[in-house]
Length: 524
Image (cartoon, rainbow, N blue to C red; front, top):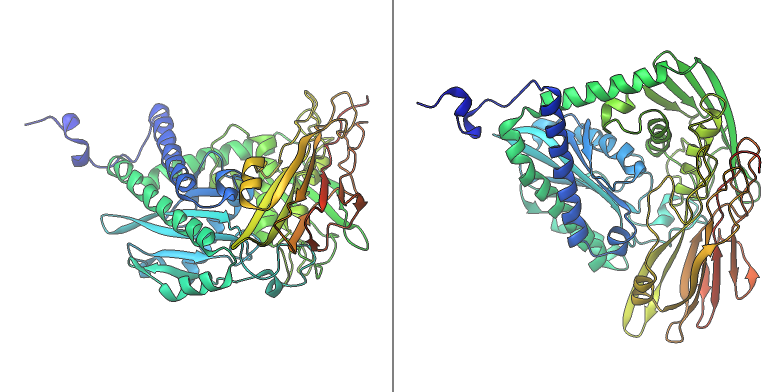
């Protein structure tokens, strides 16, 4: 008879305690599982938003919806919002009602990622008949119907198809009515539904790769241990900072008037609370930020500043809370439009950095330009097209280095390859280059933005375009004597235009997009 220590792995009781080496090995296994699911999604998706722009995330949670691990390339907003979405699903579909083969779906901004252009699918994962985890994936679809994603949209009804919290699949059976509804309401259904089914494929991949780990490890015990350690590390890091309330104020270009974001960050012992009282009220424009998204882009900079190397999971976010008055831009009431919520959400990171600048001056960095996008739809020849192209800006400088150029921070989105732009839409790229000198001067210089120029080709007509651009009026500011960056610019046929309104482009129209750089750090 074999000794107990030599029994086959499947015959052993799953491990519930872990020494440091075992814990590190099992953590790496979790990361490899979600990374393989992520790779499956990228290989099977249909749109450039996933393949090239990295506008997605893959997360593994436990049976209560608490995050365990996310794929390496996941973007911060989704890392912060996906676990909350799983918990919302559990309220709508209690654990005891879920079955193997169920797939849940929504694009509700308040329950999901902050705007309806991201679709989230969640699959319950079972082991020996017991619910043990969820795989959760979200990505930006090429189109969701309605008007184009534009800051000019006045409410959510103009923005497109709303998918409430529903079952895409029930015990393995596809909800064909829902699929038909989605197909009928989006401009490029092959791409949109292709990406949704790619999400489902990735969820299945995560389920398969998780099985060997479940045979060897008690996932509840492993999750509790990694969360405990991450939470302790974050609380220790917060405790090392002086108690107090630290304030900052940043501005967005706005419309008739600038948009104000007021941040009051309070450190009390091992906790941080961020209060956005004083921020502008919600607008009949698509820049409103729902609480789930505001939390994600508030927790992320705290994590990046205080515990960048500690494993990312629910534990690291527990000591952080946020609040904004109902009816404000960061806590809007339904049916507020939120398609361009990134323009405001991305400013929460520089707001927090600015608030903490005097507390940890060697760790914060100056404001940056985040990312810009242009969305276009129409037809040429016998073919419909709908594309979203990202054009990034400059990152702010830090105490130790210049800011990076052409970088999407804090969103982690990629610049869409020019080859894909020209292949999927009737445009010709004239130039895309670093906008030299657009970063702010300083002891360390801000990163530069991008100059991107293209024209509509002769075979197209009436191309509807929407430009999500910011920093055209309020540039990224420097820190500690660093200079602000150059402002961005949008011009059509040599004439500067307002990016907040949709445009109809004609053949040979030439469009120039120049993104802002990042602010400088320290006196030049």
